[in-house]
Image (cartoon, rainbow, N blue to C red; front, side):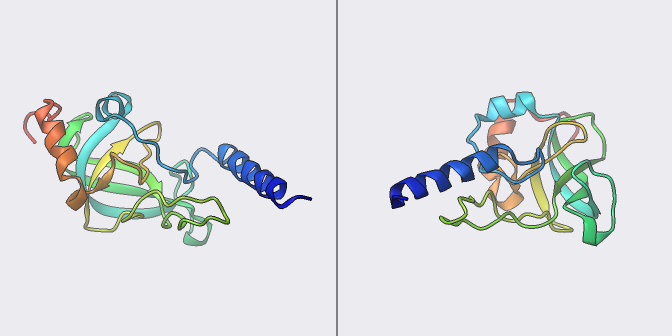
Length: 161
């Protein structure tokens, strides 16, 4: 088989496998307008990680050797969208995303993930149970300054926080 045909077939298989990945699986980030991301998010807040419990994709606690994700409890530092709760629980990655590789077709989707205990993050969470992934606009707090300022400027900050 011609080398170009083999490479094309491998590329098509890699693309199809990423499209068929489970809902909770890591995938390449897509740039999303901040206002669109805000409109579709269930929660938007700056939070500090208080607890991390190994879980399934659905956030159900399991033993560490079976876990693929984690159920994170974050204390709200500043809220932009939500119910006004002092804490939120979100499901997120337990292991870091895969490193970039031409051979595998994988793309790294973020730094600082999984969420570290005691660290602060800007969280955009979607779905039920609420899920967060390492793609922008979610970010480590120290890298989210511009986004946080824009959220404030757009008037998305909830009073009292």
